[in-house]
Amino acid sequence: MGPWLTAALAGAAAGVLSGFGVGGGTLLLLYMTSLAGVPQDLAQGINLLYFLPTAATALPSHIKNGFVRRSAVLPAIAAGLACSAVAAWAATALDVSLLRRFFGGFLLCIGLAELFRKKQPEQAA
Image (cartoon, rainbow, N blue to C red; front, side):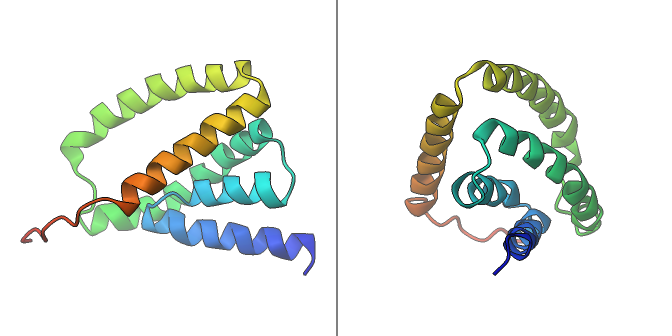
């Protein structure tokens, strides 16, 4: 399989996950750093550019179906902007090998949290 086909398949899989709102960018980062040999800091920049059109494409559908809580949007955006600015500064200041370790630790924590999360009761619509 050619490198362009592998990249297209990884982009397609990440696009499907992004459409669901479940972190397709994380899959894309894993592909780029583990399989495509892209340095972590460059992969993060590519991932940020990837996220913009995929989020813009999926958002209208999520709004239409009532999956966006409007009261939470502005506080989430404000906190996201502030924290992403600080994290971007930190990511560009850190050594790439340390950045990879932080990202790996983050993925392990998220994976363990999902693995051991108790099922929430279904909410009535």
